[in-house]
Image 1 (cartoon, rainbow, N blue to C red):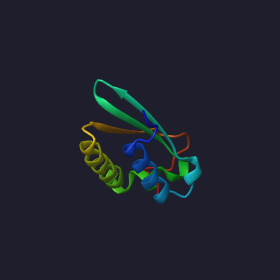
Image 2: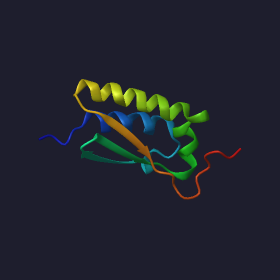
Image 3: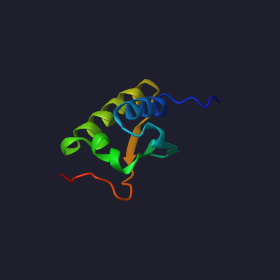
Image 4: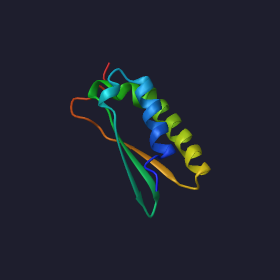
Length: 91
């Protein structure tokens, strides 16, 4: 089986495109009875850009991931890990 997963590659491309620290983007992919779980970790200063105002960016990313998952008959969920010292919700 190929190590190439459209959902993970898509998420990595989108997130690296919007953050200031693209080299700090880490994605873990797990499969369980609920489907595919992608766990995203980004630099603390990038949390605001990933989540967006009132969660709008995260919601949009989740919607697009669902569409990517539908193409491969997989239910894709996204978990965004809250890093230490994140700037989310401040300012």
